Image (cartoon, rainbow, N blue to C red; front, side, top):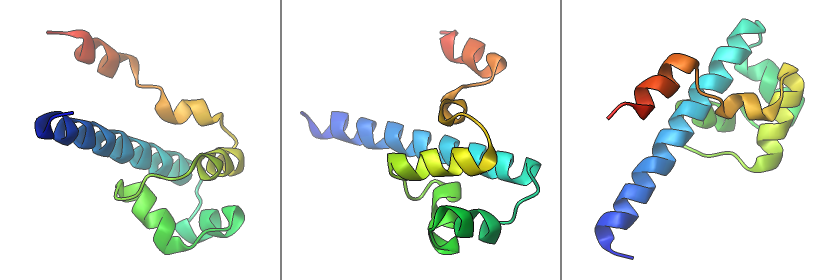
Length: 92
């Protein structure tokens, strides 16, 4: 694997991390929960949750499932793009 393809892969993972973090933060706020509330309920630190919401750390699968459970949504909803984003992504 070339250096440029490795860098492209890292960039894509970072984009997914940021998008996931934004979605988690948005749903948490809609549920009127603080970071402290959510972190306590899933058993992680506020600092770790903050890193996840900023996209600087990608959470393990069990943390994603725990967050989804506390927020009362399917974990898959974190990875569904809104329709207008999907259409834009398909445009050349």
